[in-house]
Image 1 (cartoon, rainbow over the protein chains, first blue to last red):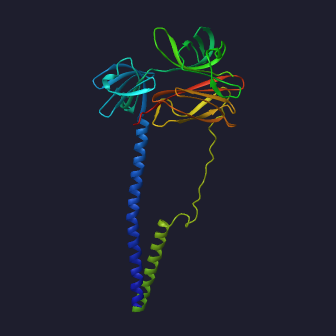
Image 2 (image 1 turned 180 degrees about the horizontal axis):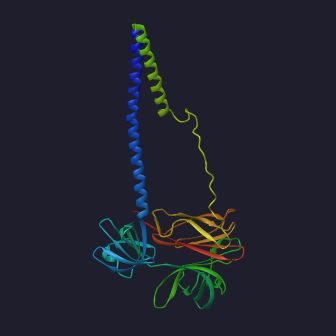
Image 3 (image 1 turned 60 degrees about the vertical axis):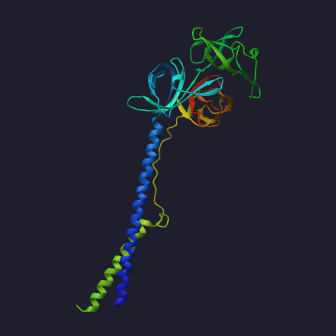
Length: 212
Length: 141
């Protein structure tokens, strides 16, 4: 009988011992879970603070630029880990802080301080600003086309140096085209750049006639 | 009280504690399936996605003024069911159609740095809607 009683008590004690071991594991698991959640939150926050500023450099300081963006002037600070690139004719060159000057069009990727909106840049890329326009051809004068934009203004474009002219055929395929395929009244899409801002003519790199 | 009664009480207490301990242990650590499926209640929520009317185009992704390290990316959104779409970007151009629900998904290549992606939708009445997205491709070595 005594053995039976001792056996029962041993069972009770061992069950509590097992319970306490599991409790330690549970605590570890809870801690890990908490750490995972914190890491996820931090990553989410960093992702939210990650931004792109695009615009023209207004001024340059010792290690920062002021850039005119569509949301106003923004300060972009750089540091030892910031990488700088310039892209010309599709080729990229790694450059440095001093290579980028006021007037350059840049895209900066980095994290933004939500209070000051100042960006700490991870990468800055400079290239000639491209403009997209969609509109109807109003008139044609040799290679200069006047486009009535879908969303507003008239734009002069020059198709003489376009490297890619395309159209949509009756099979709904995009195929190569020539200037003759771009006629008055056609709806077109063009990507170009301002080679001379004073002329207000967009030099088109590629265009597509959207009408079949 | 004789010795046998005391032993019986002690045994009874021991069995009770053991049973309580086992119950507590089992409820804490056994997988939920062994304990029976938990009852889940669903609160019906209204479909907040309003139907796209004519001459509308919504781009769900990518976000405007966002960055990525991957090319190609997927441009996805909603427009009129069956509408024709043309995507035009610095490094790509594509034609696509929206499905019966008006949803579309088009992959497009990006070039280094800033890319402006324009998506044009044409409805049956000949209306044209254009939505642009500015996406910067981060240069990775």
